[in-house]
Image (tube, rainbow, N blue to C red; front, side, top):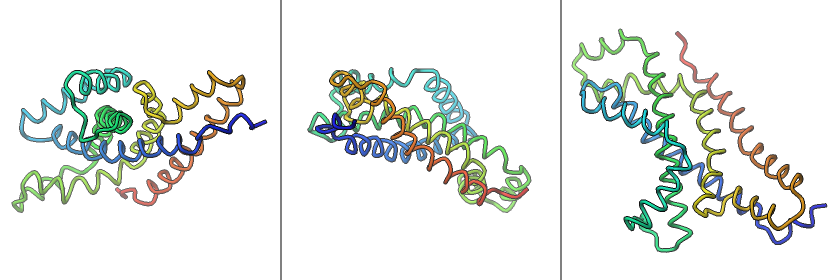
Amino acid sequence: MFDFLQGYDLLGAFWVTVQLTVYSAIGSLIWGTVLAAMRVSPVPLMRGFGTCYVNIVRNIPLTVIIVFTSLGLFQTLGVSLGADRFTTINFRLAVLGLTAYTSAFVCEAVRSGINTVPLGQVEAARAIGLGFPQVLRIIVLPQAFRSVVGPLASVLIALTKNTTVAAAIGVAEAALLMREMIENEAQLILISAIFAVGFLCLTLPTGLFLGWVAKKVAVKR
């Protein structure tokens, strides 16, 4: 039944999907946290930039962002992100696009966690002479992250599924291989089921584990 799988690097394709997810998740967490800090900053210019970025990026389809990284950044502006091989360039551009898009959702999740921190703690920290960066780093963000593990898990699962859009610029991940197999083999239902199970194996354990973590680290009010 599965003889048609010979000649296809199924595990390799899913490994590329995992790499896209991990690198994009790290980048999104960093940039999303910076954006969240901007959105609660006392500096109007930083608040304005963070708000505009989130509202604009969240309302642009991910496919448009990914295609722009290839056609706009690479082919028009010559941005290669330090790579010289076409496959590596596309992979890095896909990570950049996924990071730019997902960080907007990470920002909103982190900002919701920041809003759960009691205002009295912030005022007490300011009263003893701590500046805004210190209050954010020492008091606010540690509690905020503990409050939003669940929402961040949902963002991570969505990111895992969104990596399929990278096939639009030729990144050899699972969705691109699935399309190739469907074109070459007369096994539409079976191929679709195999890839559905593959993504289920990636997302379900992640959701269960992070759900358990969220309960363990939840801030008791």
